[in-house]
Length: 325
Image 1 (cartoon, helix red, strand yellow):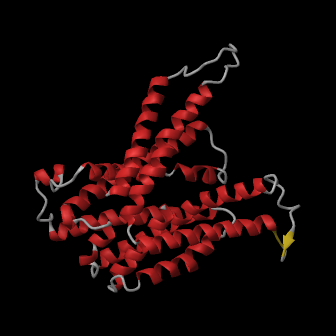
Image 2 (cartoon, one colour; image 1 turned 30 degrees about the vertical axis):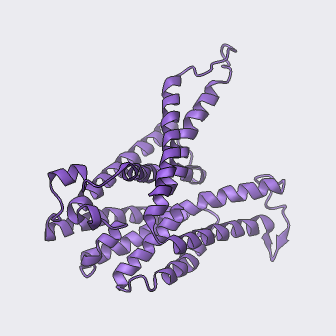
Image 3 (cartoon, one colour; image 1 turned 60 degrees about the vertical axis):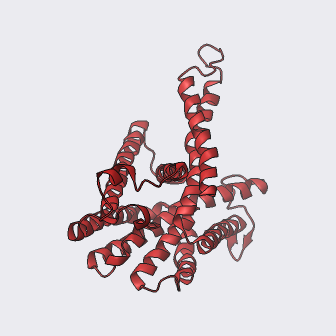
């Protein structure tokens, strides 16, 4: 779902910059998926992307600066006042607020990338990893807050808000600053696509390997076809299937909002709020080596159950809101 959303954003950027409307949207999405995303997804490891990740983040920062530039040139939108800034257009129901929360959950939910990334980095101690996590969370929060406030003031509320910030920038598509920002955002989303495909590919490869009854480091002894092991061939098939599925979703839906609302509620909320407290409770239910006693919910059990309850609500009602809206 997330990978499909990135393809849709790339299609919207092409739509804005080329001024072709939706005529070539699907063609561009399919071509981008096949000729750019698929070859990158076939790489064995993801660590080569670290060289471009800084450029990718810089593109998002430049987008915030571009929105601020548009605001400075044209001033606040006519629909913005103190009441609309804090309360919106006044026609938002409970489903709208729930879907906004789904988007927030999705925006911060990227931990499924962590196993793949950390598995290819040099070993770090807990203090270093915690420092990176805190720095990235704070940085992302500042970035999200900045673009939300600037986008709201610049493009207004209600019907003035389109599917994405990319479409909001369409009236200013002839400005060189906006053009540069959109090109950098396209590059950034393509890199994000790859970071989302790799964990999917890794999970599929693990599942196939287990079904074949093979171990983690047995690729060298595997059968070979055209000089390439069957393990690698199956890995390529998994990557191709994941990218193809993302392309199909992007072409069929053509809306980022629908995807992010659903993924934020159904997948992100479940993995963010439901799974972690259950893991903690399960781990703390094991006997301690020091006493041999059963330490069921020994530490912060109430907090774990509260987070679990909130996550279950997000999962159930959030999914219903995403489907009903």
